Amino acid sequence: MQTETDAFGTWMLKQPDARGALGELIAAAAKDRAFPRNGSADDVRRYLSESMAPGEMIDAVDDAEADWRNLQ
Image 1 (tube, rainbow, N blue to C red):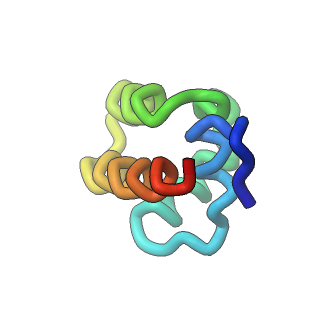
Image 2: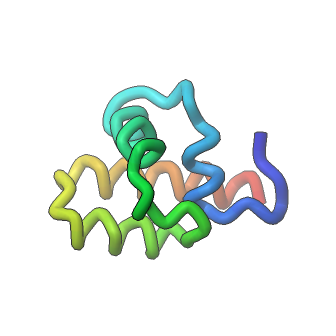
């Protein structure tokens, strides 16, 4: 469930049924204390880039951001 005040990172973590790269990212992010939960999609991409995450994870953020923006 999403509220108007959910940051992208928070919203993303509330998508437990996600599959593929996004599902893997969400599972890893839920365990990662440094993940930018209150961050924007750009913050999440920056964090993943700095963490040397695979490109498909960043692509998954792009797709998730489109979904998140459609809910705004």
